[in-house]
Image (tube, rainbow, N blue to C red):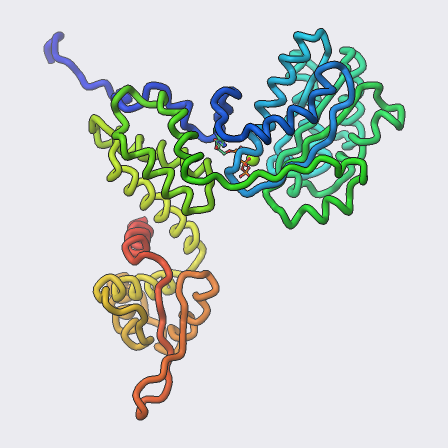
Length: 402
Ligand SMILES: Nc1ncnc2c1ncn2[C@@H]1O[C@H](COP(=O)(O)OP(=O)(O)OP(=O)(O)O)[C@@H](O)[C@H]1O
Ligand SMILES: [Mg+2]
């Protein structure tokens, strides 16, 4: 090897992303990047307003479908409230607790204390185990008093995952019960609208004043959200039709901004892997297909190889016969036996396959209907694939390779 020979940089990242952090899940951008949620930002601002001047924050409940900006807006406005309070010489603190990570009373209470200690930048050692939820809360009240905190807000995200309401109850009573002299409030977030009634029954009626619902985004809003993150990419890398395409697709699918950002990121990653100079709508299509394949793999992950062969057989039939939608058990069975043989497995009986197909419809992958044959034939069952066959085939080919 000569000294001047250049070696490829195995860590090369390509020329697609300038700042990939901006399109990563979990990134909390600053308030200026929050698009199209002015009313919601204002409503949470109103609830936290009194706390920025040392008064009591209003407890608020936030509902809305997944990916509608609930966690983002709440965290951004709380961070903003903290700055505002600082400017007013008021000691305001908040603690963010994601209850899907801390589902028990004790774990959520511990996380609240830990977050508060971290935000105060104090090295309090919050014990990991061995003390009761109430003791964790006492650590919180002690910190609040020791550091002279005027107002404190706890964000309980995904509160429907919490197994108990004691934390919420104690937050709403801490002041009147004399445990703390700090003004305390909570922002409760849930993507389960069904949870609304349960929460209403469980918590104090005084907490029900502020209820906020986040609606799904439309294509225009999604386009704006994505447009606001284009600096994640190197200049000129995104082809102009990419963002409108991702926005349109995501609007059709429940208006979920998380999915939209994720699709854009995955399209960029595919372009990066292929070493191309730009991100095109073909990358977007591939990213969407990849995500569908992953979801399908997860869905059938726990089923037996026989079920996979049956679904594979139906997918092959569907792909080969675009003019036909549904297929009789026997035709599926013929292909199924070949696939099973190729894998060296003993095929199940036709009757067993018939019954499995009927059961599989519960997974929402196939649908079985009785169809009248000719007069001589009587009625028989036909099975239809409810997914795109190419997705099913790709996923099953991949899972067979493993
Ligand atoms: N209005 C917006 N402007 C900019 N980015 C947004 C906006 N709304 C959502 N996002 C982005 O979309 C993603 C999902 O948002 P968020 O996590 O707030 O959703 P959520 O409503 O809390 O969903 P879930 O119920 O699943 O927790 C995040 O990456 C967030 O940064
Ligand atoms: Mg959330």
